[in-house]
Image (tube, rainbow, N blue to C red; front, side, top):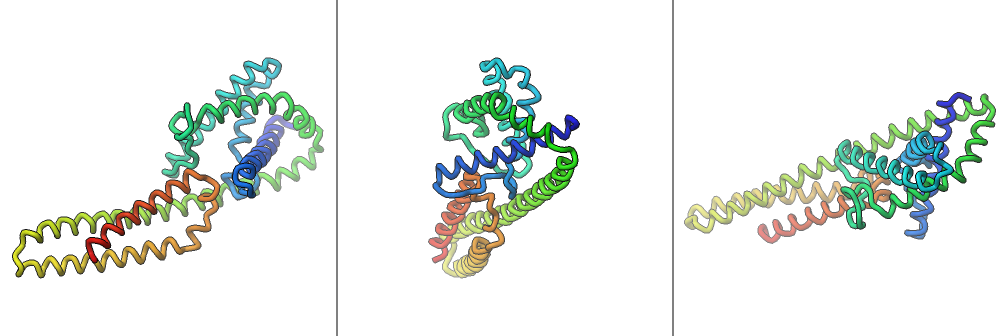
Length: 270
């Protein structure tokens, strides 16, 4: 078996094992099953990539536990930091956030989980990888090719579907940002109109009432648009909001912000 095929197998196997770890961790915390993968299928690519990096770089150091721990700690933490940063820049969304944990870097990594990765690297390289390597190397070539011809396209299709799902979410976020800007605009214009109206004569005050009436109609239209938006199953069908707490937190904070603006406008317009 060629080296590239061997490492492709390692990537797929460890991506699946990583998914199992994430699901088990979530099950312990939430007492229920939750697909914690970034993709729809049972894989976490960051685990596969992380183990490829660890194996390729640290396998010669597997007999030195201290160096193996330090290397796993640094390499996997660096990968998590880079992945979190790139995902946020690409999709303008923070997918996980360790900001509330001590000794974190930008919320992307924290000491606690980096220590877990260090210990996990020792376990994986010393105990887990040897039998997996034996299995992969003894897999018949025909069987290996057949399975990879099924698994790799399935993984690629899953990746494409996930990216489309994220872009779909981003589209909705841009819609809501536009609505928020319109709410801000109405709020600022209304405040200015009321402030000016205090100084106007009773004759001109009729123009103020007309402006307020127009703002009220605009506000009601925006309020209806938001209500229809949040009732849309198309939007809330995205499982990523359930998988990534930081994403869900960001969206809930945005909703509370919108509700606060609407409450203030309703008081002005009532």
